[in-house]
Length: 254
Image (cartoon, rainbow, N blue to C red; front, side, top):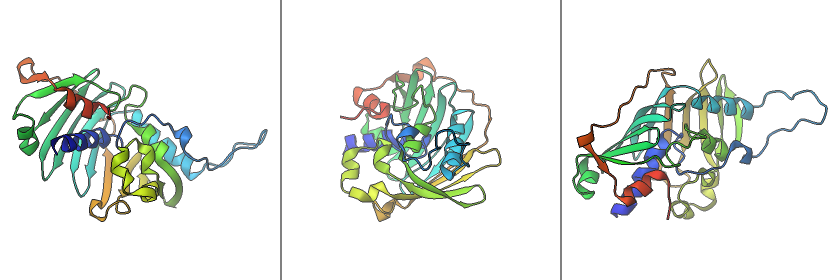
């Protein structure tokens, strides 16, 4: 049970800044089905909903921002500077307590409170590990490629708003966790809104086709350009993370 909770916590924290799409998949937006193709020699086609949403999502890798996630099982909030590959995130699970995560370049620290902290030895220190590719990939620090890979279809639903479906199996999420859902995981409804500057501002995914108890996962992006100045924990406040914890937070799957 402890290992399963650890794995769940790890992928959840990794997912927070990647729009709730778990894992460390290396798919890119090119994997998503195309909605249009220009005929040779023809003029550029009109902008499609996919074009607009893709551009809005890609902007998440361009500047600092604040992110907030709400779902039936957990909540999270944090700040990130994708260009500097830094972020600070706090995840709260009602049943297990709080997990804090700090990423500064090649170093990642996590700290457990509550029940999780007790299960992992009661250490009150930060646990340091190398920043794995599942946390903030160098080529995709904001995790936007995972989202683009999972979009199956998208349509405009209003002014700067969109709706469509996601194939959650493309997200890099644990295959065993999705096996019971079958094809239901391949068509999860989502809605999204874009701000006046063309940046993704909200993203909501309906998880009930997988399990009614999961409800909706909603992510909000705000305060673009907010200063993000992070410092590592003091030397005496940190120690090296055990291997199983480092594996869970790196995106490594056995």
